[in-house]
Length: 199
Image (cartoon, rainbow, N blue to C red; front, side):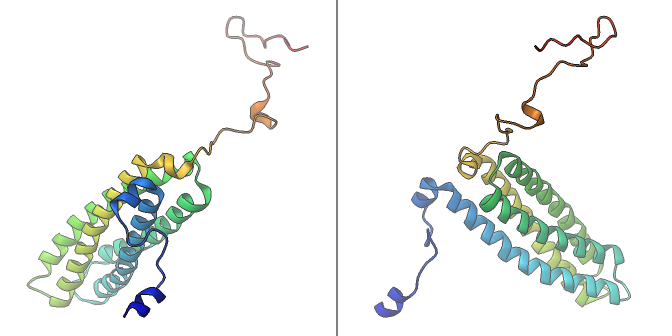
C-alpha cells in the first residue's frame, strides 16, 4: 500500500490546504477553475440532453432547448477564456474582463435556474422524461450560479496574485500613445487650431 501511495504523483498544491491557498492564491484560483470545468463538462452533457428532449417531445419548449445550447457554448467559452486569462495573459484588463464575465455568467445561470424550475414543474403531469431533463438543467444552473459567483469573487479578491506586476500601460519608449504633440489641437477659446509649441 505504501508503494502505491508513493507511486501516485500529485498536482502541485495537492492535496489542497488552507495554508497552501493563503500562501499562493493562484493555486486556489486554478483549483476553482478546475472545479468549474468539471461541472461545466457535466452541464454540457445535460444541455445536449435537454435540447434533444425539448426539441423532440410534444410538450417541449424550443426556447428551452435554445437556452440550453446557448448556455453550453457560454460555459465552454468562459472555461477557455479563464484558462488563458489566469495562465497566459495575466494582464489587469484580461483579469477585469474575466471578473465581469464570471459575474454575468453567474447571473445568467440564476435566471436559467428559475426558468428550468418552472419548466420542470409545468412538465410534472405531462411528461416524466421532460420533467427529469429540465430538473437536471435547473440543478446544474444553480450549481454554476454558485460556482461562477464564488469564482468571480475570488478572482476579484486575489487579482493581484494573478497579474504579479504586469501592467496594461503602453511602453514608454515608442508607439503613438507615447507621443505628445499639440500640432493641430483644438483651442476652444478661439475656434482655431493651437499653434505648434514644439521646437
